[in-house]
Every structure is written in C-alpha cells, then in structure tokens.
Image (cartoon, rainbow, N blue to C red; front, side, top):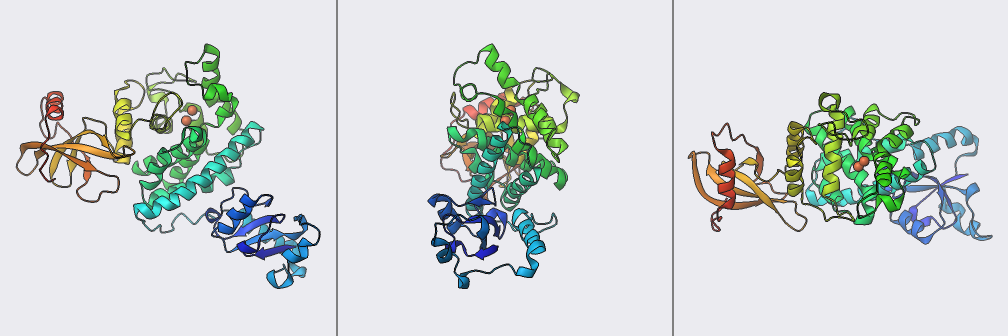
Length: 431
Ligand SMILES: [Fe+2]
Ligand SMILES: [Fe+2]
C-alpha cells in the first residue's frame, strides 16, 4: 500500500517510494530507499516536498511501531480498486524528474538568490556524480534519464543568473575535486554553448557531456589520481587511458548523447596534435572537442589541487592563452567572453565610454577583474591611468566587452600594454 505522508510524519524504518514535488526540491538522488539513519530522516523533513510516498509493505518498522507510525487519520491510502494502474502512475510520477518544457519562461534572479539555489543544485549534483562513478566502478550502465535533469537544473540556474553557479562550483575543496569537477565542467559547457548560440538541445547535451566526461577515471587507482608528485611512466599511461576507458564504458550505455561520447574521448586532445588518446590536430578536432578541452583545463587550473593552489580566473585565462598549440585561440577568446573575464593585457571597452587594459584580479576568491583605464573614447585621447575593479555582480560601470587595438589604431600594441601596466595608477579619479 502506498501512503502519502507529510515530511514531518516520516520515521526511520519507512520505505520511501517517491516524493511529491519537483525532484530538485528533495535532497536524494535515489527516490526509492529505506530510511535507515537519523541523517536521512532529517534531510527528508527539511526537504521542500509536499508529500513523501511511503510503501508500507516494504517498510521495516519495529513490532508495534507500525500502527503508531501509520495511524488511519494520518494517511491517504491508494483506493483498493485502483491499485495496479494507480500504483504504476504514482511510481512513474515519483520516479520521473519531469523537467519543465523547453519553451518555459525562466525568471532572472539576483546573484544572492541564485547562489542559494545553486548551492542546493551543486550538492545534489555532487551526490549524483558520486553515485554515477560508483555505478561505473561496478560496470553498471549510465542511466541517461537521471543525468539529463541534472544538466537541465544546472542550465536553468545559469539562465536565472549566469555567474552564481559558475563562481560557486569553482570554490571546491581539494577532496571534492573529482566529483565537483564534473559539475563545474557541465556548468561551463552550458554557459559557453549558450554564448555560442548553439541550439538549446545541443546545450543540454553538452551539459550532460560535462557531467560524464571523466567517468573513465574510475579505472585509475586513487593513489595515482591524487598523487602530488611526478607520475611514473606506468602511472601516466593509466591516467592517459581514462578518455578511452570512459568512452568504451559510455558506448555500452543506452541514450548517451553523441556529444558526450565525443567529449569523453577527445577532451585531452590538443590543437597541435600532442594530446591524447588520438593525437588529433586542427580540423580533425570537432567544435565539441575543442570546447571540452577549454572547459576541462579552465576548471582544473582554477581549482585547488594536491600539487598546486588554484589560479584566479584571470590568471588561468592568461596562462591558457600563452600555451601555444593547446587550444583553439579564437574559441578561447569566446570562452573568456562567455565568462566576462579576460586575460591580462586584453583591451576592453567600459560602459563609461573609456578603454582599459585588464591588469589582474582581486577579491577574496579572485573573481574581481581589475582594469587599468587609460583612454577616453569621446576625446580620442589618453587620460592619466587609473584602476577600476569589476565584481561579477557589478551593473554599472561594467565591462562591455573586448575591443580591437587595430580598430583604435594602437599601432605598437605590445609597447602600449607594457607602458600602461607599468604606470603608477592615479588613485583619486572616479571611473
Ligand atoms: Fe579528463
Ligand atoms: Fe576533466
């Protein structure tokens, strides 16, 4: 018998068959399980669901406690004559994540509002990725039906506010890297794909690709995966086998999008052909593979790792731009544009009608971009240089985007960058 109970009526020993409400509002990746711990109970009671569907027949209450826990006046029993079809409908409703239709309107949120929601989505996604990796270790196929709603939840968060999820998922602890890296790459891929104006169906598939791209790492021993020092030849071969291992695993799972298979296999290839596993170069690499390589490395270098501290976004993009042959340079520029963060030395236009050069980053987590302002577009003349800081939540003044030094006829551009960045900024000039 299925009973619909309020979250506060649920007890240890009850078998949960599903939840009423949106899947993202309950804190469990699995919808069917036995409540065995006080922690599980507390999480259910705090969940924002309207009802918990409990299977009384599968519950394991203490003798005598069952009648206490399931009093007649507290339950809504499934009508007896409807049991088989009703049960089926109920189960499907409880087990299906029911993502909203693609043409749904998503209301923008403030950074602070979305940050709270993003925290919950990240926590849920992290648990799902842990489950996914554990299943992969056991050789079980990936359930694409469970992965797609996660990518959609991440995509919806980015649609409500583009920076909350991306900023938050970067700040992972060292021991969370393996799982949260997949969530971070999912978020970066979705944000990047939307910036490139790809179809929304493609956007969602690329989000799934982000979640799945490193699933082959389950084949690598933990002491190798987390080793801070230099890898031996054999250890390196084990690490470099993860794209093929992941791809071989994913092709056996039904309904995995082609984009996810492609990115899983190709995210460690480089434009000059020195990557792995195929050593593909230039035009041999698809747009998806190039995007995957950029998002994967960006998240890796902006995260704390056992062998190095995180770089700020600005430092990361500056370094990635300097690695000749690794990435597709125009695509890397578009990626920076998608984040609104630019490498040091980039010429940018400000909403104040001034031009500046990105000088570095600031703020507790390095997400504030520091621009050295030096040129007035109205006067077509240089001004005394001063620094202006742009937080991710800044509305005005703001960075409008990158500008072309050729358009502005800064003929000796490298010399101008060196001169402006070496100058002592004026402290008391308003932007
Ligand atoms: Fe990888
Ligand atoms: Fe990765």
